[in-house]
Image (cartoon, rainbow, N blue to C red):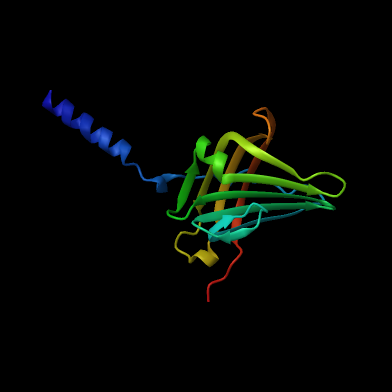
Length: 168
């Protein structure tokens, strides 16, 4: 009986201490940029996002997706923790660390809010300095309009992100 109790305690300790660094994301089925659209996938460190959807100094690693097609522009920002070589944002964290904005001529600025989903990221070049790093993100977030909790769209992106800064 003592052996069974000891094994149970060891298993519980092992499972509860699992390192976030074990996260893996398959590079299969990467999201393609839509036809006639310019896309960029970048990140910056020690940053945050202003109310006007610009970078500012902060405590996050901010990932940005920018899609431009003619007079239409979509910007998506994800605020991830600075520490570690991988991360997973919970459904609650997504509500405060994910923002999406659509601008277009002849229409109002559309600001959506995340309702739920998952965002996972892995540094695929952990031995390189931050300005040479590449992150692979898997984003699957259901969004609604700012005034409702009704889902109106799902954002699905799986892509590599490059730094938009240089050290030295």
